[in-house]
Length: 268
Figure 1 (cartoon, rainbow, N blue to C red):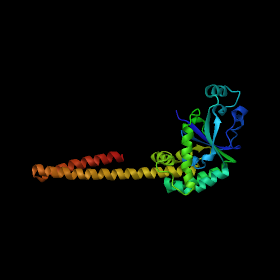
Figure 2 (figure 1 turned 30 degrees about the vertical axis):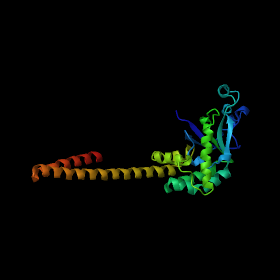
Figure 3 (figure 1 turned 30 degrees about the horizontal axis):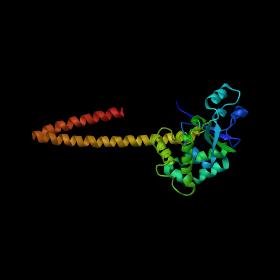
Figure 4 (figure 1 turned 135 degrees about the vertical axis):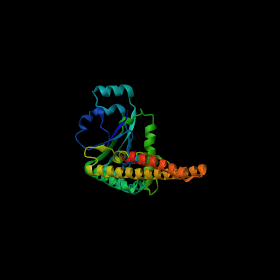
């Protein structure tokens, strides 16, 4: 089962406190993005190690509910890490890290990066909250360590350095490049109310179609070369075995017929 993570526009520089009953008023129509299993790269790009904070697992539900009682019974005082930063700092980091990240992702994803920055500017604030309660490991430290390593790697960009070779950011970019043909906007930035825009989604959908057509053409060219070589080999083999031209003609005709039939099936 997939885990869901959320990027929220928040009024306070912290998670809502379930012990104080704050969740009931948290979901008041402010902007929220959703992602699956792990924070997308553009979410990470807004944060640094100093933004890492801990919250009690039980307080992800309001006190007085059955859910809060169950969490308190299971986890007690165990905590999990999350991220929060003021909007101004988030925007500053996105701008500062633009070159270092878009140069790795490819120029074709610069418009996506720019529109994400505009989204944070227009619809998030005064704080940007990355809710990671779905990743809670009971305070064992594994998730916190991964967060610390990722954020430290991103901070290298602030000093004008490249991210560490084989590091956490490299891993995020490699994963994105492996799956970018599916939905690059979702993979880099998540999705939410009004995001992505129709124009942005259509832009990258059209890009995916062009890439697919190009790859199909390359495969067809390669297949054509293979069949061409096969025709030559069969013709030479027939002549070498018989010393006659007629078997060469027959072999050529058979291979050519198979080639044409295969082409017709692909086109159909």
